[in-house]
Length: 177
Image 1 (spheres, rainbow, N blue to C red):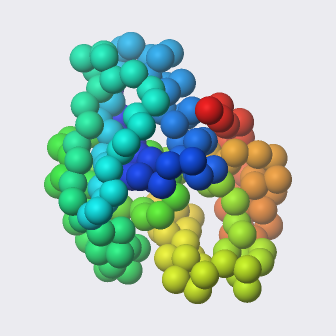
Image 2 (cartoon, one colour; image 1 turned 90 degrees about the horizontal axis):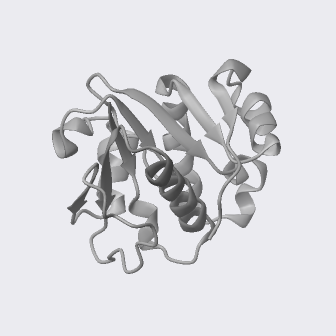
């Protein structure tokens, strides 16, 4: 099976999202030697300075693109065009993370849901982040087969605030570095 994962948030080192995402990807790669992983990284100006997990295995490929997050927000969250497979090739599953929710051609979709701060305390978050996250969550709710929540609290919020069925939600506690 080919599994694509958006690791673009690793550009923002030492943030909670980057730490959780690193632990998640590192755990998958270290435990699973059967599947092929294609890691998608995009940033216009930032680079992955500290890829903490080891990419020695032949079952892991990193595909890097120089596109600004605002462009991907427009393409994926607003227009919802340009399937991820057009950039990284055919995959069976795609796992998105924090910022964008790309469409897929055939791949099943999962996403990591960290919190719903943009709904719970929008006044404490920059307006651009609130708007982007709400657009992403619209597509998450509509298209994702599985939503990986980092806590029981996030799972409850997803059910109560977004109205997502409990059957689509899985709690996966983060391995933080």
